Image 1 (tube, rainbow, N blue to C red):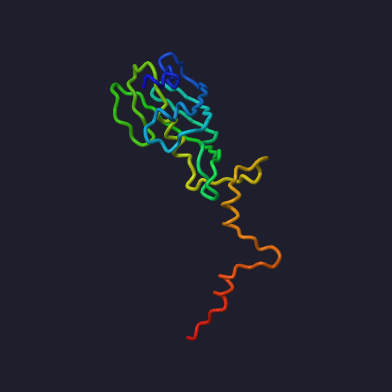
Image 2: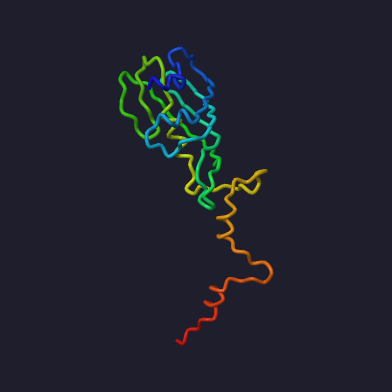
Length: 173
């Protein structure tokens, strides 16, 4: 975790109450994770930390983009992502293995590193299909050669002869 010092929260010095932090993850951050589905991108995180005597509530808001191959036209696109996630950190006398969204941390721990959670939240924010409404971009990144094959020209009375042939098939039964 030495590479992720910038993502450590100094919890020992924090007073009870609400605290705000901002983080930015980029290509160098994603490169530190082996076999990552994200190689390039830039994601901004805003973290609201509510420190209480026995626990901390961490509310993350993320917004940014990751480089991906468009599932429609195969062009490299800046795929927008955004999400909100919450972590619950409970203080205990000894560190216990995490359960779902609850992390147990020793009461005297000087800091809490959120790097792996930032990475996981980006991966969880990835959509199932890598497409977005790129028509609104000033210069769409689309591969128009591929799109031309997906949307054949139907202007000037041209129709797809394959479909016309199928319409002409009749069932004798």
